[in-house]
Structure formats: structure tokens, C-alpha cells
Length: 247
Image 1: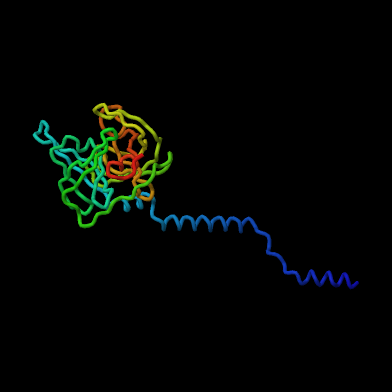
Image 2: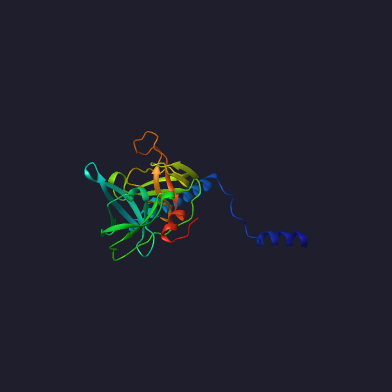
């Protein structure tokens, strides 16, 4: 009898467990999680917005003049500041053979520039600028991206300044023959839209760090308009001309 009483007393003293979850409880928990995730996503800026704001102060408009049928022909490209000294990386074909090169910084400062060094084998030029802006904002350089990684091309396509397009890295290690017969190797292939005017501009990752310098686009119809394939020189290669590490 004492054993039975003790057992009943022990059962009485043990607190009851939580009630079993119902289907409604599970559905409500899932809905709460989805709502929280949507709220967090809405509060956080998009990758493209972060990339654009980060690279913006380092962007440069590059214009070059050269003799032509109309006495002087102009060519528009893009560049990016890569050092505290104001060195600008761009595509060599934007400035090669130019009688005059001018750059416009993000703050509106305009200046003449000259090619300080060049890598013809990579279609890369480093520009030395005569008059620098009061505040120089060099871009942050990153390593080679992975295939499938999101990237953004920022530049001046068709003269539309400071334009951003989004895509992914399609392949690495590509080889193409550029106009003039120069063979460019070890290129990043990407599908963010680029057009004439993007040349020399940065290809950046989600954080706005430069992973490459845009050099060209696939041009099967000889129309110089985007067909879904762009190419960039890895920044580790391009930065070698500006005194950075080169691979």
C-alpha cells in the first residue's frame, strides 16, 4: 500500500509536459519564419545596390581623341582608380594611338591623362593623371571569382554614364582574338550586359570589389553589341601594370 501511495505521489509531483504540437501550430511557426525572412530581406539592401554604391566613387570616364576622317574622332570608355596615387586602369584599346586622353572622376574633376604603362598582351593600360581630385577613392581589389558567382559590370555603355548591369561568371580561362589580331588569354567570361563604352570598366563582386577589367564582348555579327557574352581581364593580372601583384 505504501508503495502505491508513493508512486501516486511521485506522479503527482512530476510537472505535466507541453501539449503536443498540432498542424495549426506547425503552419503558424512556418508562416512566422517566412514573414521574418521577408522582413529581413526587405530591410537589407540588394547586392547590386551595395556593389554600385561601393564602386561608384572609384569610377572614371575615359575619353580619347585621335586623328580620323572627321579630323578628330572621339572614343568613350571607362576606367577605375586603383591606387592612392590616382592611377587609373582601363582597356588599352580605348586610349591606344590617341592624341589626347581625358578623364572625368566621380566628383566631376576633369583632367588630361597619359598612358604610364601598358600590357598589350592583356589589353590593359595604366593612366597617369595630371590633375587629381581632392579626395581619391581607390577601388578594393579582390581575387578571381568562381564560376556561377554574381558579378556586376559598371561603366558607360553607349555613352550612358555610370550604368550597372548584373550577371554571373560563366567560365574562367577563356581565350579570344581581339580586333587587331591580339590573342587575349585567361579571361573571365560573364553574362552581365556590356556594350561599347564599358571597355576598361570594372567587373565587381557583390561587395563592390573589383575582380576584373572589362575588355570586350563576343561579336559574331560584327555589330559591337552585346549578345550575352562579355570578357574581362582578371584584376590580379591587370593590376600588375599599376604596381600591384600580378599572376
